[in-house]
Image (cartoon, rainbow, N blue to C red):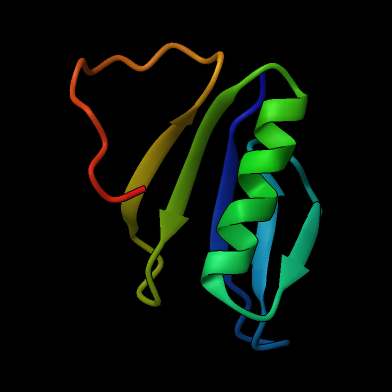
Length: 80
């Protein structure tokens, strides 16, 4: 189970996907939506986890649980 973060790389202008605790980017994409999808695929392939999406200010603006990870909240996600 692995968690991933999606954030804007100010140097390249792309959206980076980084495994939590990792030193390097696991990948990148031209759009945040595309990077979010890739991060969710990575999390699913590693047995589930959380994908945390950062806004341009660097703060986490959304977080999604990827199955079979355990969602600590019992609320249906209406955004995705």
